Length: 392
Image (tube, rainbow, N blue to C red):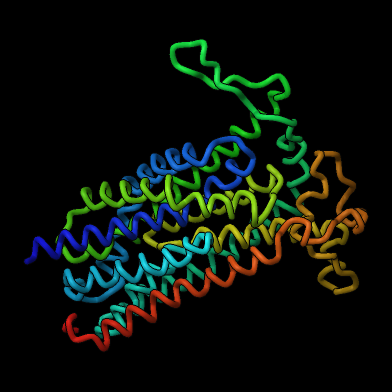
């Protein structure tokens, strides 16, 4: 009977990993796919490889936090309870993926396990408090770092990185060789190729950071129950993630690559680098992080920094002048031209935010980001509290 339950638990963990792959591939490789730099299938393969590297190296620390530290007595992770937790994680993430929205997998997983801990009276409040504090602090760190970059360094970065996409495909496959290789087309310039390559590299960094944080969401309950060792759990979880990246992730790739935003290359590189670095740092100290929320705050911070260039800090603090806050300020010097000193810019050069974000898609993303973790937490608590089969 135990072996049958363990098999069921592994299958549910695979279901969770499948949905993790669907939820995290869009934020990582959406810009590259949206720029026609790589196909959705290639994005899935790269996501799988670098997710595994992150999971195998740093991710096991987050597995320990969720599977052995978030609840005071890991004994509450019976096989039945582990299956229940994984079910609510997977079901909530599936709802987000179904609507094409990359939900916060870490918040969903922590919510499900916290629901179990509350129902059993074994929630480690200190660990939960530490996680919650970092959830509040880390987006603001990303916001302020990005704001400083946007206000003082974005123009210099943009002069080095900005590119204008040429018409037509970036490359063609040279099939005259034994192994077909991509060759730049006549309309593609080297600056453009370098920029696109950088977007792909940043996507790989984001995939790595996702693996460090999100592998725990799929396998932590089973590892915490003692029924599955760490290494095989990571392999199983990553294999499931890989399946999700080449199947259901196509919906979130479409949302993040085409529907939600059209970030300039420089802005995409800055926000992705800051976000991924924060997630890797948090994973290294055992904190499951929400990449999507951190990335969103980085975009806002970068836009705010660009939007406030027309006024000086002193004027902004005194409230004598206000800047037309717009995330679309990221495109103000999209061609890479030299900007005037801070305080001397023309506010009319900053377009409206609706030119960068699609309001309907943005509202859908924000709504689902809050609904999905609530579904997981409430469903897990009610089930473990009132359904006698779990014996808590």
